[in-house]
Length: 243
Image 1 (cartoon, rainbow, N blue to C red):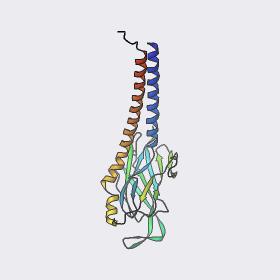
Image 2 (image 1 turned 90 degrees about the horizontal axis):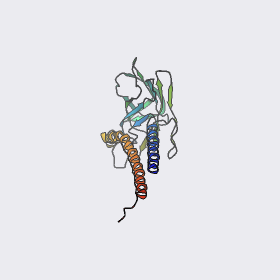
Image 3 (image 1 turned 180 degrees about the horizontal axis):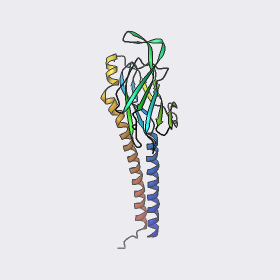
Image 4 (image 1 turned 180 degrees about the vertical axis):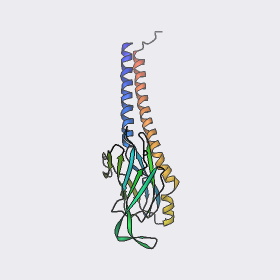
């Protein structure tokens, strides 16, 4: 009986450790600032949201600064009102000018700063989305947005490290919007509709749920293997009934 209990206890502890490690890694990987959806079409328009989770146990996020990439200016950038927050839009000169619907634009948005009202902000354990409409999207492979997240206690999280495609994720990754070339048959209006379609946003919104389900499946699989091993050990130790 003692031999049977010992493998069972070891197996249970192993399962708990594996589950904690897997779920902990999944939580850590999704804790940084992201842009959603994470993919759009070059030349199109889209509605995007900067998703900002609060990583502090005691302080609130009171300011979010999003810097648009200098190498990929966008002609039209507008923000959606966020209750409890004000937004400041900064612009910069661009040369050569941007052509948008036949007009030449000499300025482009360079930075967006959201500031929470007094006693407001993103509380511990919560997240906030800051919606933005952008277009026409530039003819580049991706846009990297550097983000500064300021807390009520004065601490600042700097999400400014540019991820390397195929490489390991940096400790403080910047949000990345991947841009794909429009098909030859797609019109600008169709590209804009595709970029802003609810399906694109829904796919990205479901990505977190898909990750959670994948992790749960992995843990369940490990549990099955461990329980199967215990059953095998138990059958080996049980005496064979005599005829």
